[in-house]
Amino acid sequence: MSVPILQLENVSYTYEEARRPALDGVSLRIQTGDFVAVLGHNGSGKSTLAKCLNAILRPTAGRVLVDGMDTADESRLLDIRRTVGMVFQNPDNQIVASVVEDDVAFAPENLGVEPKEIRVRVDEALRRVGMYDFRLHAPHLLSGGQKQRIAIAGVLAMRPRCIVLDEPTAMLDPVGRREVLDAVRELRRSSGMTVVLITHHMEECIHADRLIVMSEGRIAMDGSPRDVFSRVEALRALGLTAPETVSLLYSLRAEGWPLPLDALRVEDCAAAIAAYLRRPQGTITDLE
Image (cartoon, rainbow, N blue to C red):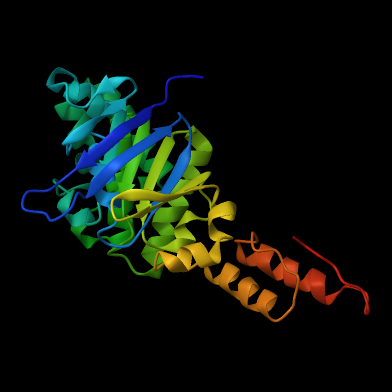
């Protein structure tokens, strides 16, 4: 098996004066090209996990390896952050310039990239997130979703192998959320980049390859979104709910409809219900 791009080995992290660890013995391997969603309530440890992935935080126990580099090794810090780019909740905190293209160019300039190459990277990054036509605009005049896409472009201009998005839609309205998620999915489709999406929105996890559920600093569930969300009772025990599609199917099953619980998308849910309604009268169809 190839070396994972991200690896946590029995990682714990405790904030000063905290009563319990924010991360408590977490072990995890993420392979190159994976799209992993990390779900959990506030205080579950998911954002602390995100910050450990590019050495913003360093474990108080265990170790984090980024493409084989230990985040505790200060001599590799720049290489680690070139490998793993971070996008945070509030896009306003990441904007440093008064013109969009200058903002996107900021990080590669600080990495010492040649000006001609910066021009190429900026244009490419803005096109990837659908913001090229706004390259000469003032960032503060853009919508929240557009600002967050600019923040993503700024990370992409560094050419990382992995991008970690720490609740990037938390401060956005539904339109902005959709813009950002569409940009992330298109980025993954077009580049095959490793993506780690931290979120507390169930619906944002549907398109991931893998879903990790955090609770009290530990990994409570780990599997495909279909597998994890079909475990409705286990999610409820953690104080979480399944996506609305699964919740509907679960309620109908309780009424005796033999419907699958892995139809996560609206169109798949509708198709499953329609197939049941079209069944010949007097027959029982088990769709599991």
